[in-house]
Image 1 (cartoon, rainbow, N blue to C red):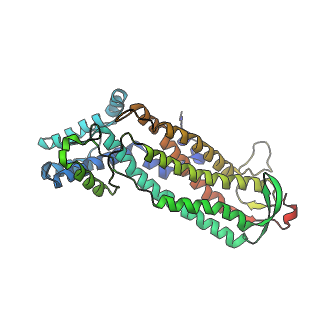
Image 2: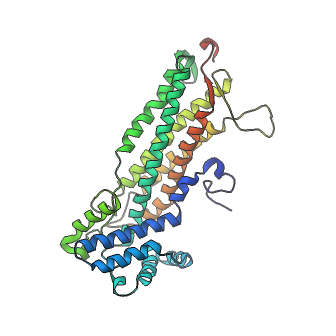
Length: 354
C-alpha cells in the first residue's frame, strides 16, 4: 500500500508527476550527494588542501559507486541521516590513502542540503518552463475568445458584464509576476562543517566554499544550517504558484457549472450519472492549492532550529517539502492539460450567463 497519493498505484495518474518524482527519488538524492563529495575533493585539491591524485580517485569512485541501499536503510534508522554510512561505503570504494580525504571538513548536513539545492535548481527550471507554457496557453485563449462577453461575478453574485479577456488577465498577471520572481531565485551551496565554522579548513574555509559553489553551479553563501528562511521561501513560492492555479481551477469549475460560459473537451465520468462530465482537472487544482497552503505553515514551524542545528526541525522539512514540490508539479501539469481542453469561453448573451 502506498501512503503518498503522489506515488499511489492509481491516484498517481491524477496527482503524480513522473518527471519531478525522478528528481526527488533516493537515487537522484544519492547521485547529487556524490556530486557534492567529488566537487568538494576537487575544490580542496585546487587549493592544495588534499593531494590532486586523491581528488581524482574520489571523483572516479563517485562516478561509478553504487551504495548498499539495505545497509543505508539500517544505518539511517540509527543515525537519522544517510551520510555516515554512505561516506563509510564510499571510502571503502575509494580505498588506499585517498579514502581518508573523502568528506574532509564537511558534515552530513552539507551533503544533504547541497543535494537538495542541486535537485531543486533542476526542478525550478522545469517549473519555470511549465509556467511559460501555461502563459502561452492563456495568451492563445485571449486571442481566440478575449473579446467575447462574460458576466462578471462579485461575491458569487452576478455583477456587471465584462469580457473574457478581463478574467484571463486575472489568471495571467499573478503567474507573470511569479515567473519573474522564480527566475531570480538562487540556490546556495551548504558548506559549514561540524558547527558552521568550517573549523577543519582554517583560513581556507571561505575559499573552499566558493570553489565548491562554482564547481556545482550553485550560489556561494555562508552556511545556513540553522537558518531555514531559504527553505521556507521555496515553499512560499510553491504555494503562490499552486494558489494562483487553484484560482484558475475554481473559476473554471464555476464557469462549467451553468454550461453557458465555457465549453471543454474531456471531463470525468460519473458512475451514477452517465450524462455528466465532471471538471476533474479544475477541482484538483483547487485541492492542490489548499494542500500546499496547509503545508507551508509546517515549513514555517521548521524554521525554529535549536542553536547550530536541529534534528527535529530538519526532519520536518523532509516530511513536507517533497510533498509540496510534487503538489506543485501536478498542479502545473494539470493546469496545462485543463487549459488545452477549452473549446469556447464567453456567453452569447452576458445578461443570461448567470
